[in-house]
Length: 294
Image 1 (spheres, rainbow, N blue to C red):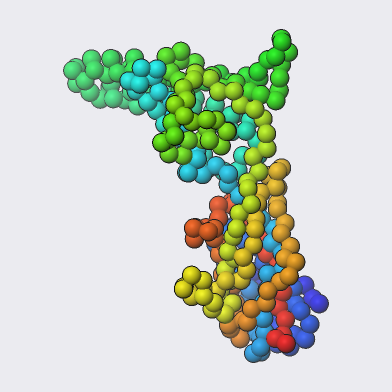
Image 2: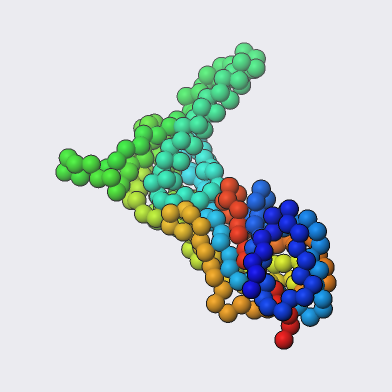
């Protein structure tokens, strides 16, 4: 068995493969869920060869996305409300989310103030008077973040995120779209509070069923659609935010559809058909096995 690595500068010719060849490809400088691995020269195979997924090492999968990255703040009298969105990404713990919320809400407050000043400067006299009135209604989204205390001692396992504006509250209801408080395990039934008490715990992503597609795999049928499915696997994020390694115990070999190729396209999708959102700062590493058909 030989091991070959695809890295844009490797000459690979597999004209007579009598034993299984192992090829490792990476998504360096590309989207880990949708990338092309290129060889300097064509890989040549005679007829009757198969390919299988042997192992995959994936970077963290986002656990905060557009579907759960929003925090809702409103005036106590419901006269005005604000939605702040957290950046998509992988957050290892709930305290990481608390710190990110603190920073995002402070930034949003700056943006709101600047917008109000610009409106005031660009308006006419009537608009100026209205702008001054509106300024009082702007929600101060800045927060204070601190560790909780119990009996006079600091409890580093809990943080309190509190709005500086005494007239504003964190608000939530069951109908809120993408409220991040669900991820923090808050009950969203008419929730309203000036502060959030956030218990620290790991936020490693739950197991996710993923479809791995490969351009040189022979066509197969999935839900009545033709596709080039290499394998179906379960992935998740490591607790420390590092790589998660999945080794296929019983590799499924598929016929290779081309006698030669210079590029291999890979795509990794979720159950909805969307590309899996991996941390783009780290490449995915895929190990393939190529053998002669029995």
